[in-house]
Amino acid sequence: MYKKIIDIFYIIFFIFFITFITVYYFSENNIRNTNKSRSFNTNDVIKNLKNLPILKSDTDNITEYESNLKNDKKKKYYNFYKLFKKNEK
Image 1 (cartoon, rainbow, N blue to C red):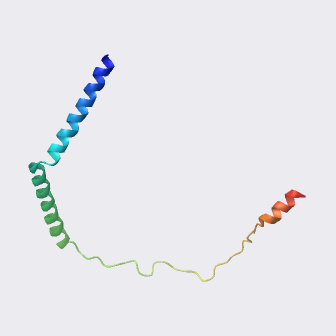
Image 2 (tube, rainbow, N blue to C red):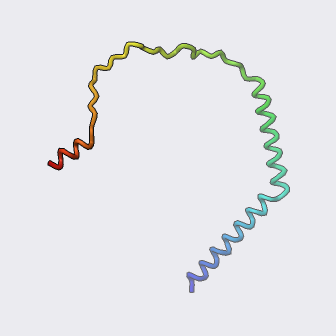
Image 3 (tube, rainbow, N blue to C red):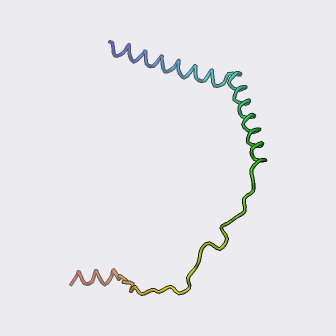
């Protein structure tokens, strides 16, 4: 009995919560405030972009490539068919 009452209370609370959130989200006041803050932010970004200095690139010729690469290690190649044949014998 108490469990059903608590469950009903949770469901009603959830429905009211979702309803109030959607009503506030779609209200004219919230839409107006959101648009205001977006316009202020875009104005600030544009103002700050004009004041940015252009930096000279200092990354020219940083990597050096060696043409004398020594490959002393012997590579070991596996042939799986030969391995299977060895196991069969």
